[in-house]
Length: 205
Image (cartoon, rainbow, N blue to C red; front, top):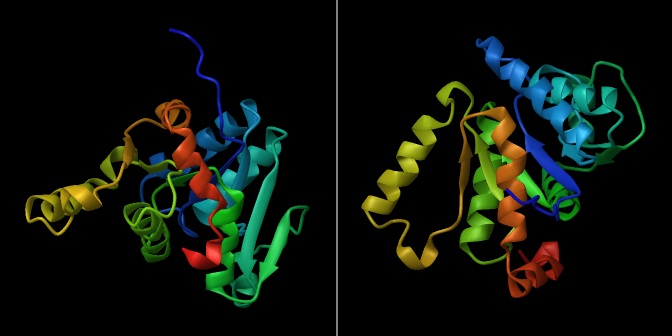
């Protein structure tokens, strides 16, 4: 199989500030961070040192990769454990944080997490559905974590609340090692016209 030329330089990873009950979740964060570093792909994430967020960031750093952590000021004491390093950006609020993460990333991955993770990845789906961007969006379905969301989205399609003209491309990877190849393939297949949509001012999304 021919090598896919990667058009992805930074991936935004949404994931939990906790580790969850399944050791596979934390392992997947470490594994994916390592894969990113090995492939020279930078991380854009929520800036926390704890839980899944901390594990994926540590793995990228330990592999020699670049990390951009973006965190609102009110979460500094709650989600940071003292590792103040290069690449940390403090924003005034959640809205500013999310817009900055969107601007900096070439693709979006949701690993296991809670309400915040769900809200962030669904927002990217919404923007894609409205035609505001064509950056790849992927659910890291570790040990079937995102199966309930996938079932809900299928239900929305069947009941025509997600109609054909408003459908969007959503990638689902069941294995950590499949995440990056799927993102790279999707990015490589994006048309020049769709790529130009990246120039849309974030505040107009």
